[in-house]
Length: 283
Image 1: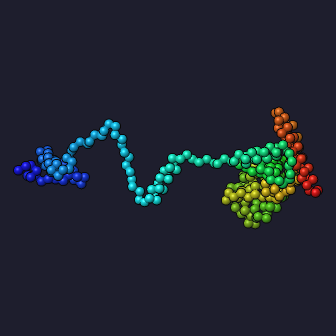
Image 2: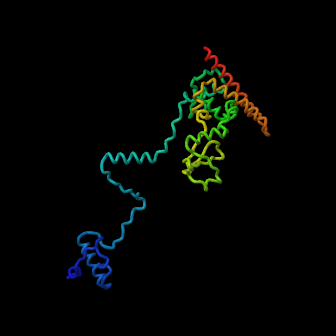
Image 3: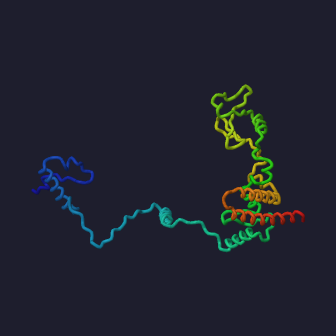
């Protein structure tokens, strides 16, 4: 009888315990391996321990393919792969005709040719559109402290009685920083303590860290208030601001000729716009 008939053939696969392969003497282990090899050879299967077949020198390795669960999912996967490889989309540039029109209107505004009040010219840049009134407001906001209205009447007000009246309306009392830690939150009248910010006149802060702005909002030099004014008033305010700015330039120790010339050119355009707005009001 052969060795395979005397020895029980073992089925060796991924589920075979390691103890069977490693257990026993070396002679018994070799007999078990030999019997298993003969059994697999008789069954026509690959022999245990056989070396891997070598690939042809010029053979190409094929990537594994994964079946899709459905045709729709397969199409979705392919489209997502294509989009990942595609370059990032940039902002679509403006058409040449529109760009040319915007540039023309910008040059027209700068030169001051045929400017009509309140007419919406698209100026300044391709991404930020402003009307004529918006342009005047923007220029005034850059130098509002030179305008006569704010020179004659300070903003924020410097009168302490104004703020004291506003504090009384809100049941607040002003204390100094030195006294802050030693004074109670509320006094006998029930007024809560606040302190004023030294860098912002009329702005206070309470114990909760909240900011309390008591400056008059109706005269605040902001875009909201300036846009409520008509174009002629804005032009007059801007001209006054330009004039006071030119006077202040004389106090500068450095050469400001270029800045002064730019201001004078801007004043010429603003006067023209003020004249046309006045003529329009008369008609």
